[in-house]
Length: 260
Image 1 (cartoon, rainbow, N blue to C red):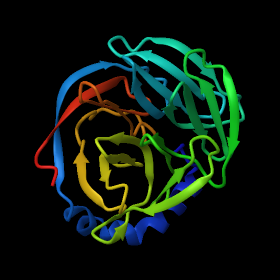
Image 2: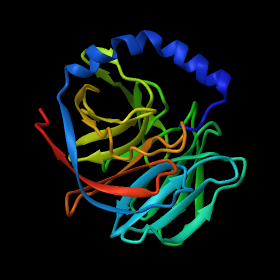
Image 3: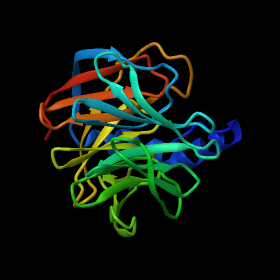
């Protein structure tokens, strides 16, 4: 989710007040895990990170903001951008994921998804969809997209047709502001915008199976926009990576505490 003008931000916060009052109860029921930092790596502090995934030894990152949105292939150890393509200035880039030999990226309000060749980054085709696009991942059968609401959309990866939706809840209450997504061992991990928590979501029921509390991971931040956002998982080596918008570091973390 991109930054918002002051008036819109105040409106969002006002609308969220009833939910905010319920958060302590809603977030207390599912178990909360902490973390240990295993490694830290350089990350472009100018990257407004909107999407992230790990594939064949490299990180792939989608960045946002009009006129600054891009899709990048990044060397993990150095943070060096080894390949990149800029989106047209009228598009605000959001989540990205891999599907076979393609890379799929969505946009915030432009209702457009780009499908690129994973190796060359050449445009293959475009899709249209209704509403906003925030985060994107896949489960091997479907694409999974967030739009800032409490719902996850499940889409056909070839036609982008919506197949179904799942409402995300914690202790029976909706969890909104779902942002960047990652498929991790049968669950959807989701950043909750403007928080330091990741929701671990059961994709069948939408229930939050647990929270990951990443408070203190990057204590020094320059402003309200540099929030936690970006989850990548190396399924082969079982490595979990997280970063944020405009963060100078990307972290490999190990979860601590009971998951259930």
